[in-house]
Image 1 (cartoon, rainbow, N blue to C red):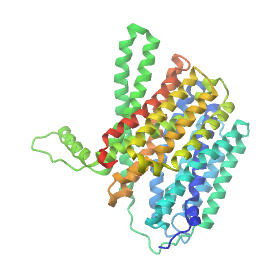
Image 2 (cartoon, helix red, strand yellow):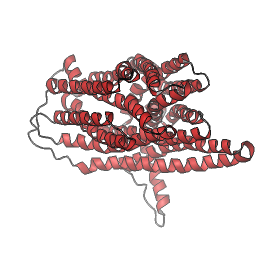
Image 3 (cartoon, rainbow, N blue to C red):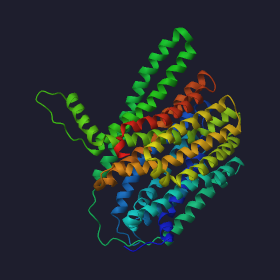
Image 4 (tube, rainbow, N blue to C red):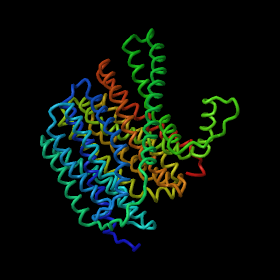
Length: 501
């Protein structure tokens, strides 16, 4: 393949810009605004968490399916672009449905359709770089892709959030759709694909089996996390009941139980999903050995061979669960902390994530150089601790509602996230078997979608339950839990052998 020019790398990766403008606008601005207006105030966190959780399950199923379908496409327009084109047209319809939703359940239906349509294009897009960029030039192309993933955080904060805050909600939705449409059309014109002469024999079942394996793992993790959270939280609440009274005991039960449930869901879910998906290498059952003992033996073999990779995924999921969930619940948190309405909160959230986005770029761009000089592991440890500090600073605005403190927290979170997003991925590429890199990294992508399921699916109901006990308590427990997850992302690195990191 020929050497690509800089503009080739830009055109091949351009749709990542539109995709991330779309995703950031809908998930961080449009949905919180709509849920705030359509759901009762005492269940808005649960309502947002529920809509996010169900939508991500659909995304996890549709995205790989569309990727494989595009692999098999023999369209004369190429393999990927027809799916991107069709997906965006469906997106525009779904955005309109979201904008005109008059009830929460109508919004749920519109969002589920949107999750389907948006992953039609997303699944196909992931194949453009492997199709068109030679292996020895993918480092440069990946750098361009990273910029197109980070810049939308700033653009959405500057444009979409400000439109919503000023009362121009429909204009914000229209601007999101227009940006998506224009970037899609540019992609159609600028990207040159050669159609396949013959449909490849790529079976759908094994890939979808891996997706279902990850979903099973997340489901098992969530069940185990909720069970362990209920037991530990219940025990702690029962112990506190005679000393502190019923409200405090209930707060301990729900708050501690919810935090334990999140941690358990991530750790157990990652291990269960990886064990099911990568494939068990049996330790060998001895005569008379039961199923449980045999499975434990298989797990020991699996941990010895794949422990580094699995702990890397756990590190990734702990951090992403915290940062993505914090972003989603920030508008509701700021509404409470500053006693403001959703429009004012959207404006404050925009300023916060503008700071986060700019600081993320500050550390993400030179992170390769930093990693070479200080080591990937050490910088990831720093990123988890820094992000935890940022979350606890943000939490402090419950007692000290000060905009300056908000922006200091944003700086810390942004610097930490910039370090994490690039260095964590670079570490992962060194931990996977080269011959099966696509399979292993695909598992980590699917597990990343589980971050929203865990963080908002458990966190939303926990926050609403505690808000009924005492106003502010729910947000305190929620953001404290995310701070703990950041710190535990650093702790999880201890499971990776130092020689590999």
